[in-house]
Image 1: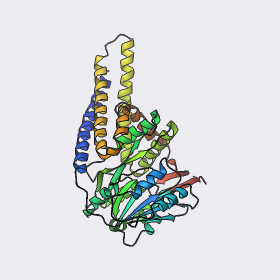
Image 2 (image 1 turned 180 degrees about the vertical axis):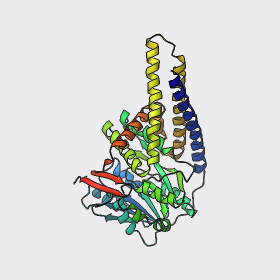
Image 3 (image 1 turned 135 degrees about the vertical axis):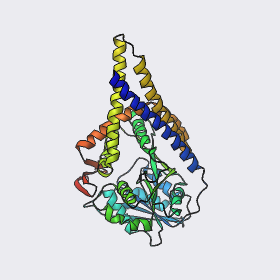
Image 4 (image 1 turned 90 degrees about the vertical axis):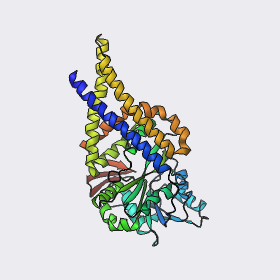
Length: 403
């Protein structure tokens, strides 16, 4: 019992620290969201790598043309001319072709030989960017950015001491379902890891902006060679150069999707396998933290049930478990309040998912532990129909490719 009490107190102290971070996160989001729109609007090349069809694909692409930004180009890039995404890309480009301030085109990158297909596509698109482009902006086609997304993402780069600016995804289940809500809650805990400390932030490939001169000075095309993770590799290069990553809450991006349990575990495990290779300190924290929390929380539940069944006093362990749960639910509530400020157009959907965020987070802790353990024993992932073996941060082996 005393061993349980000891570790339960440690988890409670961690919960208190996490709750304090939740207040800091909310404060930061409020401060950033209150800033007026920036007038720093240089020519931008917005690069969208595509492979296959995402849920809401057409609407997601259309959102890229609805940006409150004076002039920019959109480069859609895929590996082959007969990719399933091509028909929709061409339709959307034609539909918005009359916009004189927005130029759009398609780049066929060809199949990768040594890198992740997405990284290969990005390299091809960067090489095709307009000569006058000042900033590169990278996005993913499974997100639906708001109208002020591009302006807000580029704004921090007015300060030349900023290395890059980034946002993050926020899953919004469309039809609901336990698996979809679990994925949303799992992802939410990662979203709130970003904040005001630029030296601790990481890049998310679905919403990252960087000055062209910084990108070239870092020699990112060289660093990307042989990698599968564009964003972690960029983060590592920025940290080596001691350049901060600015988190832009206004660039939290809605990803309106549903998933089943197989897709949930495939997505979450892939993220942790990539994390283990490219940012092992994050992976170790998840592994150790998950082991501690799951042992205390679910072991404590078993202890309470057992003592109740035997007629023993279980008040103290129940109080400790309740404290842990309330602290975690409090952090989730603060995070949700912050996200509502950034995703005002989705307030109704966020309200519907509130119960899931307040109650399912202990289960996602178990999912994190499962993901971390899978990453301990395997570095093989499947991403968009291609199976990769992640040998190291600079070496990727392509195992199979779905034609």
